[in-house]
Length: 235
Ligand code: C5P
Image 1 (cartoon, rainbow, N blue to C red):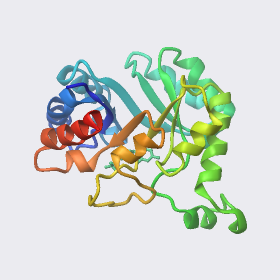
Image 2 (tube, protein in one colour):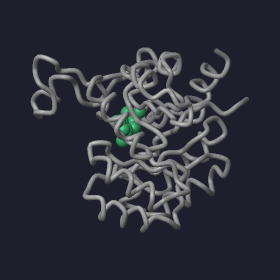
Image 3 (spheres, rainbow, N blue to C red):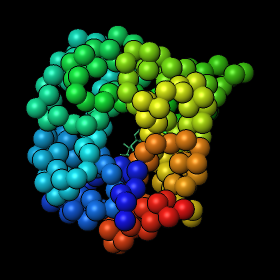
């Protein structure tokens, strides 16, 4: 079967589990995502383990960098040898910060994270990031996405709820739209709030779905990945 456009979040409690999950889900998905939990504990060993276990998968390093441009440029240069296919930075870091990451890692697709899928409109108002009268995570996400692409980002992370609006505002197919907050029907939302099912997220225009716990929290991650992937590629 064709690999599904899914990045499995390898948010594992130890390196052995990163390796196991990568080996189990690798045959069914296009991408493996190494995030803060694994990278801060295991460093590049986490990336090496995922690559070795699933050599055909792209590596998505989700460090969500957010600092002044010089610091982000230095951080990006520091992982040049790790050479991830994708690296996240926060869009809210601003255009100069995004441009600095793009320049520091020319062979990596810099992915700008818009509004975390765990935040609601009410959270944004409480944080002062939106005015009560006009509060909408969607408006903020679209604005952040447009700015990030203008600064050189090659992909955007957004919720399935705003992916269609972002595609309308960023029509270039060279820019990938990546959506976490993906939950198969009936699955536990846990801390995610702005969600959709995998098929619905793709229908709305996502190019790559980030899925963690619905796969890695299953009794059999391989079967869970296969079931979601089959649903998407057959459907
Ligand atoms: O387990 P779950 O499917 O919720 O995993 C989602 C993954 O996507 C986590 O690794 C999380 O860090 C990441 N992510 C997110 N929301 C964003 C950006 C990344 O949930 N806006």
